[in-house]
Structure formats: C-alpha cells, structure tokens
Length: 165
Ligand code: HEM
Ligand code: HEM
Image (tube, rainbow, N blue to C red; front, side, top):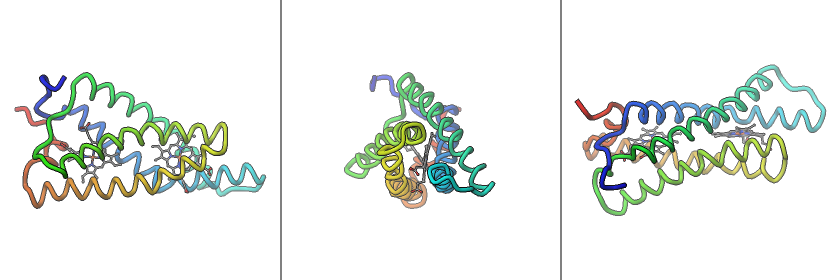
C-alpha cells in the first residue's frame, strides 16, 4: 500500500478534515445541553428551550460525524495519505495522534448513542472523551502551527489545498 502513497490530500479529504473538525468543536462546546436533556428526563423536570434545541442538535451532529468519519476512513484506506514531511520522534507522535483521532471519532458517537439508548456506564464513558479530545486538539493544532510558522514546510498548506497543479 505504501508503494502507491499519494503526493497530497485530495479536496474530498481536505473538505472532510475541516468539516469534521468544525462539527467536533460544536459537539465539545455545546455537549453539556445533552447532559441537561438527559438529567431533565431522568428527574422529570423541565428543561430550557435552548437546551432542548442544542440537545437535539447534539444527537444529529454526532450521527453526522459518525457517517462522515466512515466515509473519511474508506477514502483513507482506498486512496491513502501522503507521507509525513520530516522524520523523527515528533513525526511519530503526530502519526500516533492521527490514529488516536480516528479511534475517538468512532468511539465518541458510538458511546454517545449507547449512553442515549442504554444509559450507564456508556454516558460516563462518553463524557471522558471530552478532555481527551481537547488535549489532542490543542497538541495537534500546536503541531500544525509549529510546522507553518516555525518550520515553514508546507504541512498546513497541504491540508488547505490539493498540491497537484
Ligand atoms: C463526535 C461526536 C460527539 C462528541 C465529540 C460528543 C461530545 C459530548 C460532550 C462534550 C458532552 C458533555 C459532557 C459533559 O458535560 O461532561 C456530551 C454528552 C452527551 N452526548 Fe455526546 N458527543 C458526540 C456524539 C454523540 C452522539 C451521536 C450521541 C447520541 C445520541 C451523544 C449523546 C450524548 C449524551 C446522551 C450525553 C449526556 C451524557 C450523560 O449525561 O450521561 N453524543 N457529548
Ligand atoms: C477536531 C479537530 C481536529 C481533528 C479531529 C483533526 C484530525 C486530523 C487527522 C485524523 C489527521 C490525519 C489525516 C490523515 O492523514 O488521514 C489530520 C491532519 C492534519 N490536521 Fe487536523 N484535526 C483537527 C483540527 C485541526 C486544526 C485546528 C488544524 C490547524 C490548526 C489541523 C491541521 C492539520 C494538518 C496540517 C494535517 C496534515 C498533517 C500531515 O500532513 O501530516 N487540524 N487532522
């Protein structure tokens, strides 16, 4: 498979990267409304209209992430990804971060669905992904900015535009 690695990310891969990143940020920022919805249902109390709307959005945006990640992984397997720019320990940390992202991008929606329909311990497990996601995103974005503004090596550029002419 590595013999036929592409030289860049395709526009579909780039679009999926940024769309999924935006949807995950939405989930992380507004996820607590879903918690309010679940608590209200369990304790039989009222919830605000905002929480009801954001809870509903959390459900559908989460399912969209799962569907888009399935598409992204299929593309990743069929087409592959360009070889990392650079080498060494940090390059391996970056590759490990990418793999962990894919695991989380599948497990977060799956445990969310289980938490919604089955209950505990899935809900608690689902909540643990929040800090893990935040740490990984900070690390990953810092890495991307380090490449762009310190190493000036085109790593960020190739996740913005396809590199073929
Ligand atoms: C990428 C996908 C997802 C992310 C990043 C995500 C993130 C979050 C976050 C940050 C919270 C709040 C946790 C807290 O306040 O400590 C939450 C709660 C919750 N989410 Fe998700 N979520 C995702 C997908 C889903 C999906 C598809 C469902 C399915 C219905 C779902 C169901 C829930 C439930 C039920 C809760 C409340 C858990 C509880 O109170 O026990 N999530 N989620
Ligand atoms: C929720 C947020 C994000 C997630 C889940 C995410 C996930 C990923 C994953 C899984 C890859 C590996 C792609 C592959 O080779 O298959 C990747 C690559 C990349 N991401 Fe992100 N990302 C996020 C946010 C960001 C942000 C905010 C930036 C920029 C500041 C960024 C910049 C990049 C770059 C430049 C690459 C290409 C790395 C390379 O060519 O080796 N990402 N991202």
